[in-house]
Length: 57
Image 1: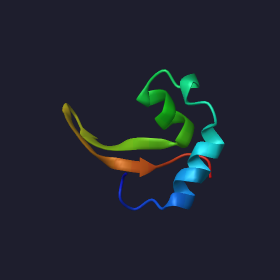
Image 2: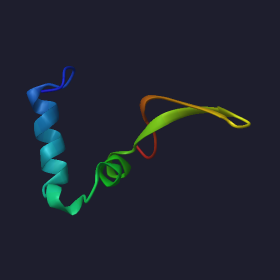
Image 3: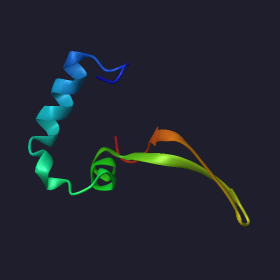
């Protein structure tokens, strides 16, 4: 299990998602939750960072 998430957090996530089969890929699931990778770009230089929480609350 990933650190930082308690049992209640996992149960909340599971109850919100309900049917995991509706997400065909990790990208689709990340879009549902609002998780996106951070990106720092300038010209042709692109550096991707940690996962951030973005989108509607």
